[in-house]
Each structure stands twice: as structure tokens, then as C-alpha cells.
Length: 282
Image 1: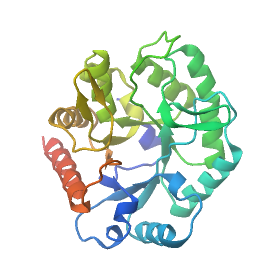
Image 2: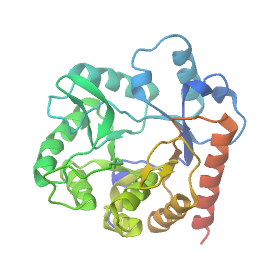
Image 3: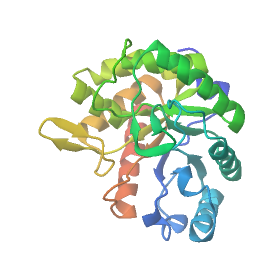
Image 4: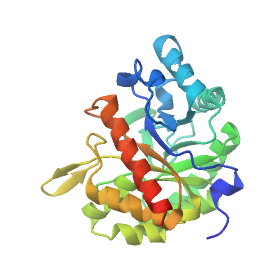
């Protein structure tokens, strides 16, 4: 495998982390259970003050903190939001994040937020639109930047590329990293009828810096990416496959709906750590 994006930027695997959610503000900073790092949704902390700021500061003292955004709108038709980028840059610097991430999607239209992460057409035209915007973000924020593969339920009109090829073109032409959401790979593969392992094999894995693991909802004719359930056995198997291909990589347990106890989320993190350790001893 060629020199990886992480190696070029001096990024080392961080282990296994969980998301800092409001439900965990009181408990998380003082836990004694193993935890390697914390991910935040930056939009929740761009205006700091009060309890969120105190909790974030306490986490920064103990762990690496990585911002993972939902509002960058990297694929949208409108210019990037300069005010948002300024505040994001300040937050990234405040927590001294080794890298930050967002989704390869669009989330704004006509000046308004859509409150969803909508897929782009898998086309060369979309690549050419996104690449200069990624370069602008990298220049403004000044830290390594990752894009996540989103879940989607319909292929957008105008697509001429396979999804993995689209991700490869964007990452290589913009020279950014990838955040590989393993659950999204599985959900998309089931919904659109492709082999998730073949999809992983087609990716530029040397650009993957971080993984997400999450749960989904199974309905009669579709899987819904909810982030509201434990990681299923098939996703754990796919996670193992990715680690066997890549070696150690920073991994997050992502749980955003129907959030259980902090111990339940940490149990999932312990399982991810155990899988990684088992793969690493082979």
C-alpha cells in the first residue's frame, strides 16, 4: 500500500472513541472506564458557554477531541459559508484537533438548511464541483480534513461513476482523507444490491483515517441508517474485514437516537477495541 494520508500528516491511530452527546455531559468527563478519544458535532459548540463549554473543556483535558460536522455543505451549489468556516476554524484550534471531518453530501439549498445529508450524483461533474471546495476548506481551517461516505436511498440523476470510484476521485483530486462509515457501507450495499467487501476493496484505503460504527433499523424492504441501535453482527464482521485490510485505525461508536446509558455505549466501544486487538494479534 502506498504512503497513507495519515502517515503524510503524522496522524496515528487514536483507538476507539464515542460521541460527546448532551445525555453524557454530567458523566463522561469523570469516567474511569477505558476510552481513547471523543468526537463532537461542532455545530453544538460553535457558540460556547455554560455547561457545554465546561464539559468540552473537561474532555479536552483528558482525550483527543475530533469535530465531525453536519453543516459544511461541501457538495451544495452555493458558496461555502465564510462565517461558519471561521467559527469552525476557531473551534478546531480551541480543541487542538489533529483532524476534522464532514460528509460528502449537500445539506443546504436556497440559503436554508435541509436538516438532512443528501447524496450527490456520482459523476465527474460533481467531482469537479466538490474538489475546489474541499481545497478551500483545507486552506481555511489548516488541519487534515476527511470526508465521510453518506448513506443514501436513491441514486441521484446524472451519475456516471460507481460510488467507490466517485469517492476515490474526490479524495485523490482534492488530496483529502476519508472517514469510512462501515455501517453506511453495509446499509447502502443491502439497499442497492452490491457486495460491501468488494466496495471496500475498491476504495483508496490509504486515505482512510477514521471509521464509524453505528446501528440501523431493518424495515421490510429497506435498511434505515438511524444511529439508534447497537452495531449488528454483519457490520461487526465488515469492520473486522476493514481492519484486516488496513491495520489499526481510529474508530468511533456513533449513537445519535434512542441514546442508551453511557455504559451501554462504552460496552460497544469495548467490543470494537477487542475486535481490533484480535485482528492485530493475527
